Every structure is written in C-alpha cells, then in structure tokens.
Length: 155
Image (cartoon, rainbow, N blue to C red):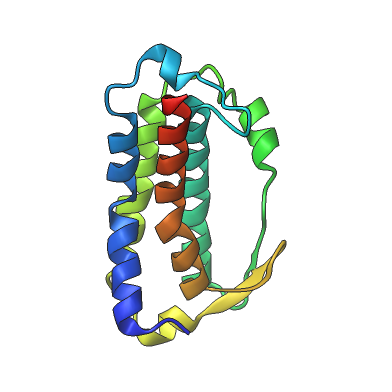
C-alpha cells in the first residue's frame, strides 16, 4: 500500500509528465524526431505512444473508480504503432491528447477518497490492479519516455 505522502509525490510527478515530454523535445529538429535508436522507437513514435497510452490510461482509471472489479485489458503497443502510423504523423495533436488526458485524470486524482485508492480490478496481463498501481505506473511513464527521447536525440 502506498502511503499518503508517497501518493502525494506520485501525483505531483504525474502532473509534471507532459512538461517532461515538452522539455525533452525542446528544439528538436525533424531529423531528431525521426532518429531511430537501435533499441527502440523514435521520439515521434514515443509521442504517439504516449498519447494513446494516456487516453487508454484515463479510461482505465475511470473504470477502476466506477466499475466493480473491472477487467483492464492490455493492448499490443507494436500493432498500435504500425496501424496508427506513429512513424509519419505530426506530433502536435498527440501532445495535445497527452496533455488533455493528464489534466482530466489529475482532476480525478486530486479528488479521490481513501476508498477510491483501494478500488481494484484485474489487468489482463499482470493480474490484480488497483488505483494505486495505476498511479505508480503512470506517474513514471512519461518521465521514463522523456529520458528515452533525450537518449535518442543524443545519438
């Protein structure tokens, strides 16, 4: 179980996720946006992944808060990247989607009761899944990808 002070820190980290991505992308050239490191996606592809992941995560949080014992389904990130044209779409709308999904979820996080934090379902890939699990994952998610963007741009 996450303590209240730790939860507060995680919420603050979550709130800064969009800005972490903007900072990592600041001054990117078109070549840098499309640079493919040997071990992963280009910064452009990462931005699209983040937008889709954030929109998915926003629904996951809402389902945890509203439904009793929801099944939270995983998805094939590589299929999303291929079928949803991550490699050649502009990033502006994806950045907007990331921001909007984070802002609306943050409004919920700031209003959740102790009982809300304990609500749980089952993730199709990882098993038991609580609102606290959700927060731990998504508080770090954008920051982890911001680091990945910086590494890709540095190559």
